[in-house]
Image (cartoon, rainbow over all chains, first blue to last red; front, side):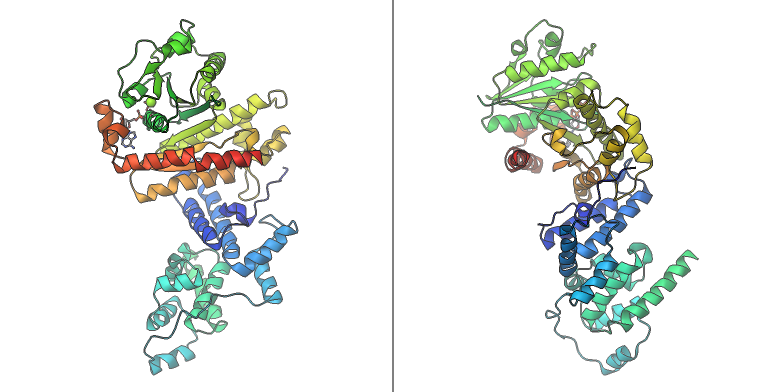
Length: 213
Length: 303
Ligand SMILES: Nc1ncnc2c1ncn2[C@@H]1O[C@H](COP(=O)(O)OP(=O)(O)OP(=O)(O)O)[C@@H](O)[C@H]1O
Ligand SMILES: [Mg+2]
């Protein structure tokens, strides 16, 4: 079969390279609603399986276009004629962006410590090796950061942050994205950006395995 | 007078608000100083006169279709100075494509700025032909799955019908099976119906304006909650990904007993309840249809 419409990430979200970050985020939330299970607009056009595949593409598109530096890198590729969603992946772009320049993670300036330091909890944070969702939530609450604030800073939807804290795999996209979200959450909460995500993902995969096994 | 613009109001399903939208659009256009003609072309159960608040007229479109009268002889006045209408017929008859072509051609010669066809439900060829000749195609969808499904079928039927008519010399396979094939075996994110058509028939469109100079527009009617407001944008995205077709979402209209009441008392809703939230929504949508959107569309078509 001849294939000539190679949807790029912009087509997936129905935005264009001139769209602002805000428009991209709005389009993402519309696209996520569109392809979430049971939307009547899918009726007789897409099967549940196809909708899930589109939802995966939507998440992937937003993980690139929703991040300024990855988007810039992606735009360069588009300019060179690399377009299809099957030709570039989020992971590739992430790797490349680390080589060319440090990842432009959200600014943390807005988050001043306004919480009371509890030395024993601080010690526990430093010693922690099991970064479960429950632990992330406790640190967040200890630092008086609401879900909405965390979402505003990280640009990860509060729905996902909630799911990460409760380790609800069924409400989360593919693990590679979850990892990206956890890195950002750890960064904002002042947790170890390497140890945290590694440990969380290990626990997350165990939960996944337990759920399917 | 500048050229006439023809609108068609269709839907895959009956009883969804076509006549309500057609009559309200007619009232809005006439108030904006456009000389407007409403034609009830529902060949199964005409009810535009009720929505418009007029008694049924004796002379109707059947007199034109069966060659007993010219179109201009059938024009009735209404309580609005710039708004006129032609009564529909209860005689289903045996309508041909050529009847539609004659009707549209004669309508275009009448001294009106705007002509609105209120169609019956479904995708019979007479309606598809009317839609094909219309500058603006508005499809009315309600949030119920059966109505959404039937409107997708109408979109598909109009798309295939138009492709066939425009390429009758190049495409000689039936297009329905081509679409069904695609539905069975498509790969999300990589191919659309547009590509599949090319591989199956050798022809496809480069620019959508080759098929529809203006996009099909969707109005979501009888919305009952905020969740229903997501429906229009979702349908638009689904059509883009599946057909590679850009659909315009023109707006949503809430379910409001005022409409039902005004039908009952045979008064146009915009007259009877001019300050209801629904009347406000409608006016906003009509303004959008008439100004920014259409302009930017036609500009884009020129570039
Ligand atoms: N937004 C609305 N809120 C409440 N009632 C509505 C609304 N829109 C339409 N209705 C009601 O639905 C019924 C059908 O409306 P209408 O006659 O406009 O639909 P139609 O699509 O033209 O139907 P038909 O296919 O029979 O021609 C009417 O009784 C009308 O009062
Ligand atoms: Mg009607």
